[in-house]
Image 1 (cartoon, one colour):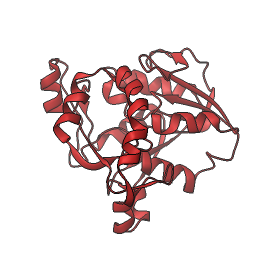
Image 2: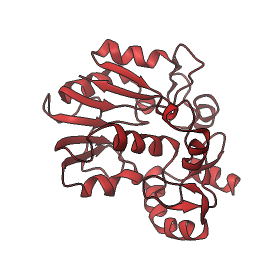
Image 3: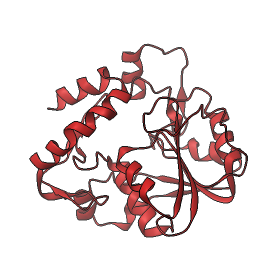
Image 4: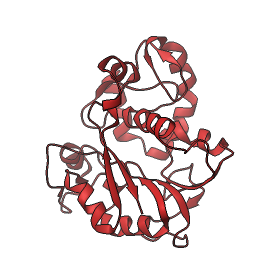
Length: 254
């Protein structure tokens, strides 16, 4: 199954994958139901999660119910337990909306919820993150997760995120990150998809972020809190929820 999943991820365009996943998800959730792992997003339990990864497949990480990964489940727990995201009125902008969140956030009565992306079929507004069609100081909350590693000019993208966020507003901008690497690595001469997968971890990534990512956000103007929210859970809970121990949530305030 791991080899099949890897082949599908690297060959099938993401918009088609999103549409196909809606068809296979109910079958996978039924087939894998059990009691070993629990997805906190929908509360359902499974005997295993699915493997996932473009370069190296990770075992037991993709929930068959919501199609969430480690980062999605960690973010859900953080938003639910540590913020008023689910109760207070908020104008929200969500880039490249994840299936695990999209329908749930859209149904929340407290949210004025807008999605945006260039290619996602779930986007309300087709827009370039480096040239957003929104007025300055428009949004209370911005979600932009695992997007910036795709953007050649991430400085411009960060500046646009800062521009459209309201003063005092919050943004969460997760990226795939090598926390053992102090300096971000980017080489624009690497354009071959297979080579990008080998070097950057995915065929459409253009860099590997190091720990300097947080300081780059600060240089744009954000106050950045580096939240290791997995410290709030026991090893047993981390395993049960399928979290990645030590993953950092960048919580950015304007």
